[in-house]
Image (cartoon, rainbow, N blue to C red; front, side, top):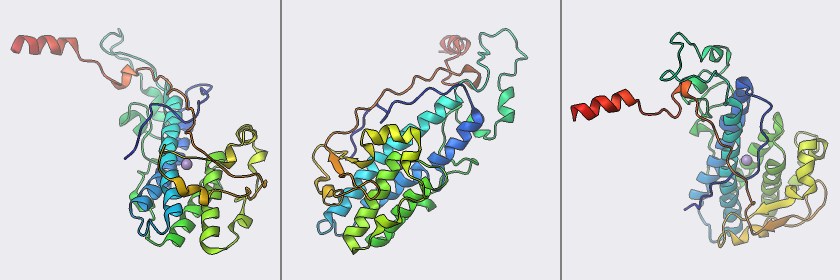
Length: 282
Ligand code: MN3
């Protein structure tokens, strides 16, 4: 079961202006091979499929708990895409506008992802930056704990690879490194950082690292996943600061209000003439 909050994990900055092609690029973080859809569904299926969970409880707790955080990440990336797509075409309501020859979607012709205008009312879709649909083929749930943890480590490093998703992704890289270390004794922390540039070099990340967010694992459940601190403990492999589990979920922030886009029938009001017609018929 999952307990849902009508909140975003963090407050999002308002973009400088509408930018359809930037929104297409951000789609990679949502529906790309290393995107949030992939992290969410990998850990979700691995937690559903986990055998021997009594014996290996801390590993099960860690994977299940991170799966819950990934839900908040698909929300954040979707909200970012939605903000960037708002206002990318001219607002026009054909029921009230005078110009019957208006072409409010003219701008959409130059946008790299047509589906944002044809299929989703200028909002996010589970596709990558080239518009390819996200696929369950991105889910790796082999049943072998060592292999699944290695895959998860690779997945989180891949997310950081060319796109530098840093603070929370970095926490998950360290979490899977710690899990592999506990399970096998291998010193996975020595591989970090991948790629070879510290989060502290990014001003956007440094703000959050100063608050210590890079060493916090939130427990996304009031009563369960008690044993994840058997893995999430000890020094952070990069700066040596203590890893800590926080009992509360992040405070969160409101979803941004998305204005209607009538030129896309979004959300689409009821046509008064049609209501009149059916009232008469009935
Ligand atoms: Mn994530």
